[in-house]
Image (cartoon, rainbow, N blue to C red; front, side, top):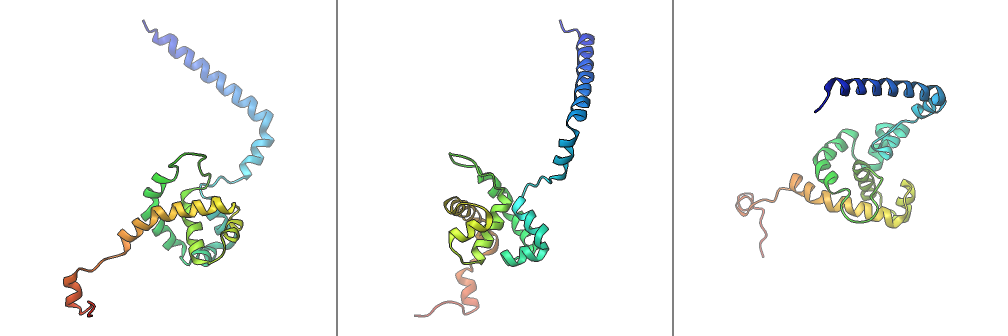
Length: 165
């Protein structure tokens, strides 16, 4: 049999005990809590750092897209990219998918060696190359389906847009 009143009494005792423990921890470690509160947690640290350091112009200079345009692109590829981000064996990437897209667009805009690009973002070249390639493998089919419209032969004939030999 289940004694409901005893169960409720134990739960209330546990809540009281937890509150006392949290109060003691706050007294003992309040300096550490203050220091940790100053550190901002970010889901996209690379993208957020560029925004904080350079503002909206930093995003445009690095990717050739405004922040709004980047957000539109992100909304289009967010689900497929997040779904495939941690696929495969081995250690999982600590980089967010949004940061991955941002770095990929920067790589595609600026033609530099993998070593230079990786160093700019704080990665080793082989790791960075795999990250960018993973993003490209996922987003290209999505962007093609979203933005590329293949005309039909009847449309080409109507516009005199077919090739003559």
